[in-house]
Length: 296
Image (cartoon, rainbow, N blue to C red; front, side, top):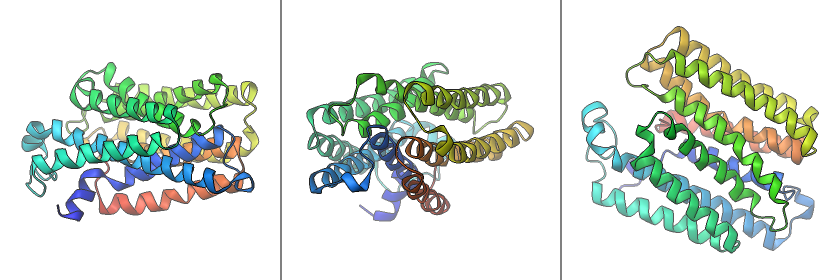
């Protein structure tokens, strides 16, 4: 299998954002403090990063596999319909990535393995069925990200269960991205984008609530949350004013990439500003990769 088309297929810029999910989850779990790390904990962090790379990559591959008929008509330049990777090899790649993801998570704990398997199932459910439903699609895609955040949190086997409710925040935001992406190849989705902007505001409110109920340091979080909000507000506003495929796709792209500052917001609030800035370093990497490889 040729490596460059394979990278195009798995969308590496998106995978970098999935890594930031894991780091955010580890921060929420209280384990993103280097001074408390030992060899075992570092290995577990690396295994969870490998797990999310496999799971996200596998989900994206199967998304294109199930879209093959539609892509042959509307996006013939994509990897599979263009023939750069055969459908059979794409299926092998997707299965292999899912397997690596689930096995890597299972090496951390049985609970982590179960969560990884759940992510794989949610991804396939979205790829095959729910993305065609205006209501279930955004929720399903959001759950993939929310459970991915919980995968990072699973590193702490003694974490209080109420912390898992934080996993609803990426559900809301990714649902907003998915709403924005509706009709991205056709345009005329102003109402969906306006709804997405309202959901973005609800996330800001959620961080205020986390400061009250989960002792999140809102002062540390503020600058990162502001960066995240501005990135999305500007991109979505442009997509409303210029409601055509080009600006809609740009809004979707920026929404996906802005998951990094959103995750840095968790890290700043539950760990430290220094660690949050390190997570933010993933953003220029993701931006660079987004210029070389597809995002949507």
